[in-house]
Image (tube, rainbow over all chains, first blue to last red; front, side, top):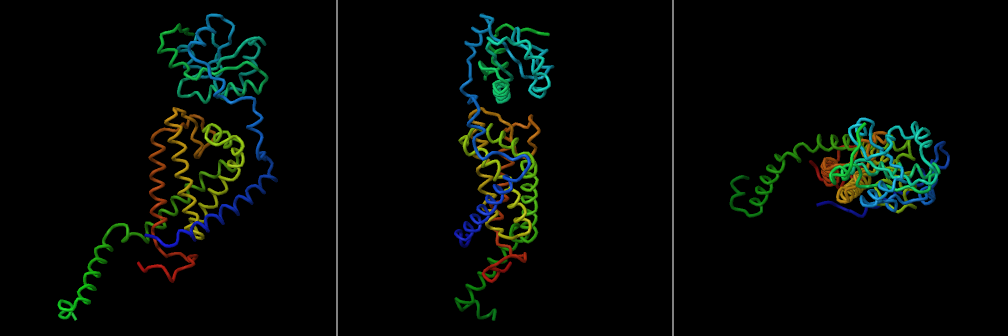
Length: 157
Length: 181
């Protein structure tokens, strides 16, 4: 139907080359410069490796050594949560972190959880906690929804 | 001449062509191409310019959004986050002014298809990450099936622009080759 796909491709390549060059150049001189690589490689994690299953969570709860961190909103937390968990809403992570930090003993394993469809946020919270110096952090990916479905004990505030 | 056209096969075929052309002209897309083409260019161009702005000002947030898709290898995330917003902005502007139009629309289509594939993969994985499409600060803006339809609509627009041959703008370089509308 159309002419010359080659010449269009050439145009596209010219645009990509020129723009990439200037974008990288601009990045070198801007204030909030982004390092070309390394930031993601240096992170001490890959969130998927921190995954913990519901059985393990159950075991941790029974042993009572873990610190459960609910990253959902305050209202959802009050409606029901895993027993003995603390609420640290993702949206106020940095504001509330100092208060929560005081509750955590250095030997404790931290388990973050949220809704199952929000597990990026619990994973991200885990990563931020690792950045804040905590070593043993895990993510309960299936989260609150799975916990509730399984008929496991619930605590309400 | 009309009398001849019935007997002479050459004239007859011309007549048929003419009728066929009339029918084609009456079809919506061809008839309205001179309005539809700039309209689509403006819409798509504006969307891409708007989408690029937040990413340009907050490259780290955008890198985080790219990371959350968990598709690109770590080493490419930052480079992608640095370059992509500029490509979006440039293609948006080029599309609107009509300079390097076919090249920019080709890139835009390629990007839209890439976004579509990335979102589809993550929806299948059940990984409802932040979209990272327009507003990076809005963490509740998660990908869902409606985003795929939005993307498909834009791809339709992009495909139409790529295959349309309207020559109404001054930057067109090969206007002599273009068919008249």
